[in-house]
Structure formats: structure tokens, C-alpha cells
Image (spheres, rainbow, N blue to C red):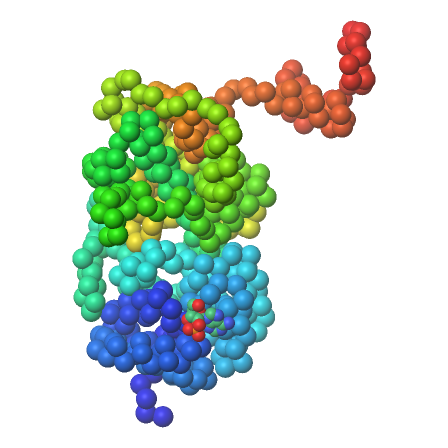
Length: 500
Ligand code: 2AM
């Protein structure tokens, strides 16, 4: 066969798959592509005849596999779950010992752990790689979080480094300006090997959980400006655009400014005023929260952001309840500019807490799953390409550079001083929101997290008393060493207290 062999192959040509394939080809790698529905593949290849590396379309999976250099490297980018398993099942008989399957979908890390084990037993190598940055990221530079067999990653590292987003080595700022056929040159790639089996997909999931938190917090800032200060969407958008030049500088703040200032093509009003207030989700925020609950990690703010979506989704119930349940009518009398600054600070402090929780979760997961995660590198690769990319991530990276064993971001001197500087505004916003009946679930949850985390004592003494009372669950004592457990024979409920 005289056909030129490809460097890598990709199965699944929905938008993410097409964009990732074009990104790979733009970097001079020849890529074979396959899609279950052949017409999609044919159209894609016909529309992109002149990529630097070249696209080779195949209608049969066997031809596709045969078109690859050894060890064969196949990226799967199909519907996560059953779709991925179906493709793996079809690929396995066509591949040889040492070949590499790479799942670039939003897989649950437990599936990735299972698939890696199954494929290893068959002599194949598996990489579960988080790919973040949506369609645009896939096309011009995503953040890549590969996990699995480290030796297998070496075989794709050059491609992963080439296609990843790049940031400036000094400032950590994303290098932008990539165009079809013209990738960004230089910079530090937002790709690093995360750890064995499901580590990459786990970290990608935590990225998404943090993203849920960021999005909800931004919504609460908007809602305070809108509900308490009576600001129009357009006005709020301008405030976000200004915030994007300071410590909150990030992709999500930038797009928020744009969204809020976008006109509705149908009415000419602000489009957000016409978008129905019910949030959807695909589940990664829920997975993050479930994992936190399973491992006993207080990632309350991230979980709160998932619940906030659920609450928004029961719109019909809310409409009915709004007619029955009462609360204060928002009324504002103070200094508007000062209030806007306070909302900014509430968002900033809440964000620090939410990231602290996300990193605590990853710390716990590495114990549970016997990974060794490098939090400095994780924050480094999140500086570009992904949805949570932000100036802030550079500060997190610096925090882990200062102390790789940092137990909680809140304890880093920089973040501590930032919270010291701004927390009084945060408290004011949560208090004002509460007094005015405006829901700010993540701002309030983050503040409760902060105040709980810094509390020498919490009322769990009473809680243990309750548990010992009804269930003889025992308690430890403040005046005795840890690990010694006590129980007293409590009186019957309502009876006089025990005589001493
Ligand atoms: P399709 O174009 O044939 O539907 C997103 O759904 C992508 O995943 C599409 O490329 C889709 O192929 C592919 N896909 C979904 N389920 C699949 C399956 N069970 N087997 C193969 N490809 C699948």
C-alpha cells in the first residue's frame, strides 16, 4: 500500500472532533478521521482540503486503523458513556499490542479507570484526556489534562503540546490570535501529564465543578446589581467589562460583559432580559459535588452552584410560590459605586473559597485513588485554553510554587491578604442580600465556608452530644487526648438531668 500513514487518528466528527482534528492538522500532523455516519466524514474532509498536515478520511474503521503509524494512536471523541464503550469495542479487535486509545470526551473518571484496566488486560494502552475550552478551544488551543499510562503519553506528548493553548512564559497570559492554518508560535503549552488511569478526567471534572461555581457567582453579582441597584443589563455589562481589567480578569467575566451588552435581534432590548431563567447542565458539576460528598470534602460552594441550577430549573414551581411566599422588597439607599465595589469584592472572595474547595477536593482524591497530583502544574495549564482561564490562576500557581504542600489556598499569604483586604465588603453584600431578600447562594455559602474553616470551635460539640444521646455514638473530650471515646447514659427525653 503506497498510501502515506497518518501520525494519529480520530473517531467522532461532531464539532469538537472536527475542530480538534483541524487543530492537529494545522500543526503539521497527518490525521486520519472516521465517523459512524460516513457522510459527515466525507463532507468534513471535502471542506478542508489544504490543511498543513493533511486529513485522511476513511469510511471503514479497519481501513482507518490500517492507515495509522505504529504504535497506532486513536483519539475517541464521541458521546461520552455508551458511545465511547461502543467505539472501544469496535477498535479493540483491529488494534495491536502497545497501540494507544485516547478518550478525549467528558468521561466520568470511574469509566476511565475501568477502561484503562480493561484495555491493559488486552495489551492496549489507554489515555483519558480532559479537553477543555469548548469548540473554540478544540480548534485553536484547549487546555489538555491527560491521564493514564505515562509511557503512552510520551507517544502523544509532542502532539498534545503542539495543539494545546499557549500562555506567555513570564506573565501566564494566554497567547491568542491563532487562525486556520496559522497556529500560535512559542509560549508554554497548557498540557501536562496529570497522573495514572482516571486522574486526567478527574481533574477535568474538578475544572468543570469550579466552572459551575464561577458562573453562578458571576450571576449573583449581576443579580445584585440588577435587583438591588436597579441597573440595566447593559449597565451591568459595562461594569463587568471594567472588572475584566482587574483581579477578576478572566474568560468568563469577559463573555459575561459581552452577553449582558448583547441586543436581542427580535426586540432590540437586552437579550438576557429575554432568555428564560432555567439553567441546564450536563452533569460534571454534579459529579464533582457527589465526589466531594463521597470523600467527605466540604466543597459546599461548588455543590451550591449545582443546586442553584436545579432551583432555577423548577421554574413553574417558583412562579407559583412567588404568588404565595413573602419577603422584603429590595430597596437601596446607599452609595451605588461603593455597593458595586462591594459586589466585586464579594465575587472575588467567594471565588477564592470556591477554588480552595476545588483544590481540597483534588488533594483528597489523590489519596483515595493513589495519584500524585501536581497542583502547581494543574493551575498552570488552567491559565489558558479552558473555560476558567483567568489572571487569578497565575496567582494560584504562584501559591503552589511557594508551597507545594499548601493545605488550603486560603492559607497562602497572597490569598489571605486579599481576603483580609476585601472581606468586609463581602460580608456587607451577603448581609444586604439577605435583608433585601435577594438569593446569593454561592456568596453566602462561600462566606459560611470561610468562617467555618477559620473557626477554632464549631457547634459540633452539641451535634456529638445529640448523636450520643439518641444513638450512643460516643464523643471525644476537649480535656482528653484525641482518639479516646466517651459515652454517658443520658436521661430519657424530657426527664431531669443526671445527678453529678
Ligand atoms: P454520528 O455522526 O454517526 O452520530 C457526537 O454524537 C459524535 O459521537 C458523533 O460523531 C456521533 O456519530 C458519535 N457517536 C455517538 N454515539 C456513537 C456510537 N455508539 N458509535 C459511534 N459513534 C458514535
